[in-house]
Figure (tube, one colour):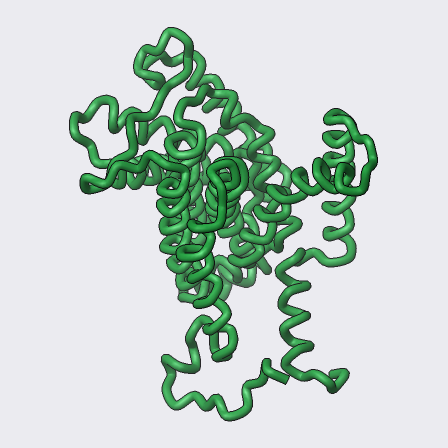
Length: 354
């Protein structure tokens, strides 16, 4: 079988601790990146970029940020869309109020302001947990909804309440076409995804997982809950804030407060539940599932010659999502990422049953 570790020897600590210890995994990731950056741009249409690939990449980034908080640190959050909104509106105000503000600095600034916002609303996690913490983060959603609709300075005194992003430009590169927008979002996802993967493998990542598994025992062995929990809120909010800025600037172009409603928070939470809690690749699996399933529900009945109205497809989508969430919570709590890891492990020992 091609998926074997025979002859792959580790001769240094760096080789033993690399992200992909199996050479076939490294080749597969390299091939996947080559397809994403070099093949898809030549075969995908503008509609595919706008309706499928760009939302998928941005939602993957948002799910990754939420997974750090919920999956790795075990802190429940129902206000993820609020942090996305803070990142989007902060980046918009930075460009609107500071002449010549570069796009990348505006995105980073939006992420940093969302990080501060997340730390503030993460303070209750030092005293409460579980359902009570979920309600506290839900308060962030309601607060941001109120702020964006009532405070005129947030929308730069827009009479309609909606805002429009400036033309996208990085170092003289005008980002106009859907292909260029896709490459921008994909590059940011790769950079932040690699950073997140290395972060969860570091000492702070182990502290997060210790707090998730048993916070009392983690405190006993010397882990500081204040540092561990608030750092998880900070990193999560930073990534989610950048995802929100990309959602507003790149995908929507112009948006209003309803673009970051509670439905978006629940959607991201369902993504990481189905994709896999405590897994970087699970965030991507969950986002792909949420983007592709509605398309399949809309197209498969037509391919089979079955008449299916848009309303019926929407109802089926909600029913299937709900059923799958219950299924994964009961049968496989670690989601699609665990199924993928199990398949890889079976390939490593095939044809032996163990």
